[in-house]
Length: 264
Image 1: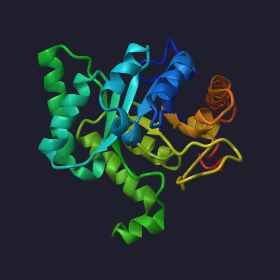
Image 2: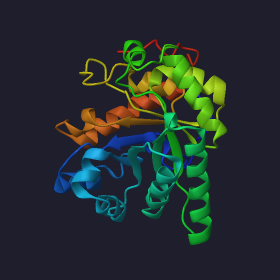
Image 3: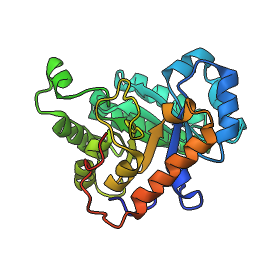
Image 4: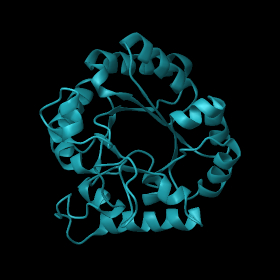
């Protein structure tokens, strides 16, 4: 498992490693959740739904309310277009954002270069730039239908290696591929993990999932969780329960437990 502390987690402990997914289309509900959860989670994920509903100002509202933002727009276009979008994300002050690794080595390299350049020239805080590997809604059969025949794990590792070559800070990947990514890319390479569900919860679109405890034990740096917190009667209590599960994963006496030991 990952034994180093990812950026920004020493003071906040395991709470800092929990990213709450704001998959909403309501600004009042968004701000309400940010205000009650800002002391319980490390970041708030803003995805396409909320960003298209509320626009860039929602990022500023979250930051003004004391929250950090993971901008999850998964940029995927020609290198110049993605690099320019990355610059604007950086100027918004987000803590992390992502692009699709399948967009090419050149696309990722140019993104890293442009982000570094604008941070130096404008005195901006540098965000962590992540590469999305294979979406957690996809399995081997789904990949075959689009021409990827090497299997999910091989494709994820291939894209993770490409991201590291491009000097990306890390990847977004399902918990089931954490171990091979860590083996291939090392401990200093961030792994942000969606596809995390509580035991007995519905999977929705997810196909490659684990419990929070198992994902942390496998070596994830950050977990992205939305529905179990968002739909809870008490979101704060739900977030605290998840953090407690994450802590159990980190302090488990059997750190050699196979990553798939607690898949749902």
